[in-house]
Length: 369
Image (cartoon, rainbow, N blue to C red; front, side, top):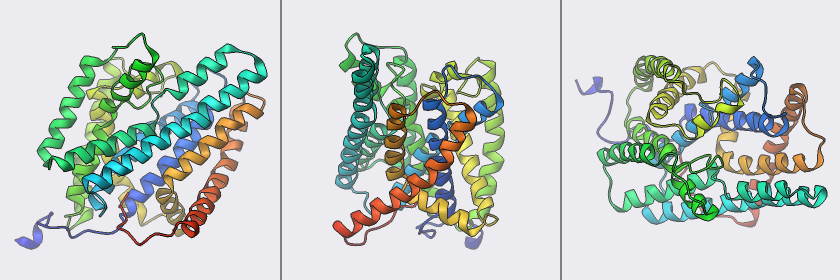
């Protein structure tokens, strides 16, 4: 009877989980693609099938998947004490603002000096005070640091996600006249269009990943686990999608003007995207054995280097806006993307190799995501 149990009482499934590497590698690939579209196309973009597909790939299979994998990785990481998590959170939070300064404010300031347009300078300030995925990731690590300090159990994480979703519904639409207050409010809920990753909306996915990681690390039979996940998640995705459409809610598939509903989605959106993430991860598990080895190795490398690739590609894209004649047509955007991917990949590998030589460190536990 013991042998038929799906879950063991203690961890039995350690090490890197290939399906998580695959979904994270695809997530950064789709992020690069959608950022090229957003930054180089003429706005508002036309809702053609090609544009819709790119935007879809840059929505559910990108950020929600990335943050889900972050939560799973916390289960597998050995460096998950409250202090370790808090230090990591503060570093990522700081990195987010450093990136925003060079990517958003400084590039816009150069455009302001070139054109004399005060609108460029104002946009640079607004984007610098925006809430990108790195500040959100920093807050996420700080949340888990506090949860570890308080010795949260799984029920507490579930309660936190539900309370956060309820608070998000109450606060949604609330804003301040002060840009600074709006920025701090935007870190928690979506006060402006520049609050791309407010905490209360997006914390659901790291929490879901953490809870899923608790199952995965004790799983005796991953094939059986992922079959169950598919049977549950695929109908949930279909039902959630139909409800989303019924209530007139959108997340970027329809046209440019509806993307705010993706960044600031509510509990219904959380259920839809959470179901999608589980289904996507399950499909990646079954696809892993059929993918060519070179594809698996590439996606795994991108998974390990995802934060560095994220920063590097944004620096390339943002400063391309300064020097290139824009907007581009879609074929030129795709050509730029095809060049951007290997350049970003090579730069990330080179940077991490140089960092490893200059600042060697003792081997540490590696996260699964």
